[in-house]
Length: 234
Length: 293
View 1 (cartoon, chains in turn brown, orange):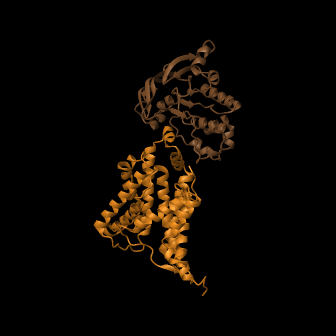
View 2: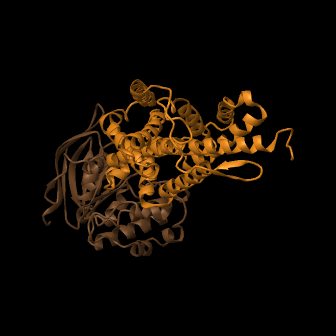
View 3: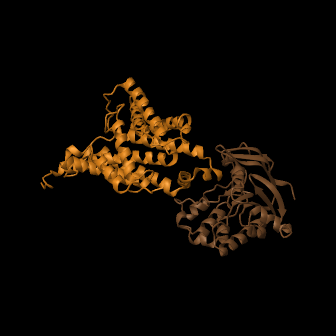
């Protein structure tokens, strides 16, 4: 693995009084696609939010591209080149599709153009004047992903992009994620669906009770299938 | 000379014009309140005092510094808007995480303090401001003072420009998005706290602009915004909290309703808006243009 683009060490995070992350550590090399696997409540989403700077309180080290993120507000973190696609998708209902797509400001050169994004998601171009609230779940997910590709961010944080979607859409999203990886994006993917994760990722970190407890490369998934099933409770 | 339901046309159109002018001020002020509420989640009860500050700024500029009306129309909103920005940075931003009630108490208290200071310094009798466009036109059925016609047109332009800015520009898209989900907008790299400060400054500037426009029509006095802010608050509730078009349409509409009430049943003219508010709340609790969240 090349030098880590994102390196997280002893990350602790709190929501109000509840202590959610108890020393999370992992790293991602530039151009890698890494997943966080784990049961509900293991702390996967909180880990993404902590990297992005949108949890109440966090301590530890989060280094991105050689800079420490832990003390920075989320707008500054975004401008360093990290883009976030939340689990609930966060489509703005008072904005139309194109306004949603154009909302995140360009933070660096090298992002995809609007035309390229429409090429990747033809449905979005057909519906570009529709209000965000009028989209189907799959379209909303595509918009939520498409929206963060323009900004020039190198690292994409994707929180359960397949949740609640029909199998054919899940497949489409898998193709898109592979395309994004081949374009050079570094991707940290949170997934419940480990069959899906295994088809796209290089490596998997397994989380339990607010800690990373194991790391499995995609090539070794078959040998470790029993262990993984125990971790995930499937 | 024709008559309508026993009402002479001069009285009818005179009151309608007055209603339209009042409506213009309701629209401009409720617009600022709506924008501020949408973004800050604070009901800005200082709005009436900031409107008064706009009028006072224009009057002081004219009487102390010989700065004419047209220059004051630009300068006063800038100065009062800056004052708003300071208020936001020093006080308001500390209460966003608290219940609405605290925002109400803080802004209401600020209004009392500001109005108290102006009353103490300049009294409450009020000072006249000369009309910048004297004269008028006899339309046959009524006499239209030029300046009042100008105010109605100017208010319409201001409202439409604000509407366009919010609904059709990039800055407006940021505002609308941040109203829905400030955390996510910030996580996209937008400095939301600065956006909030700027929004408050703009809303306050809008109130001051209305104040400058009102100076030649009303007496410039410390308490000129006190009753107005109550009516405007009712307008925002009727139009729907946070709705831009709702504020504009309801503002002008209620001005006219009030004007008509003055013609047909004068005793009710002070209460008609609140009656409308109660009815609307009974039938459509989110307001005419509001969306239930």
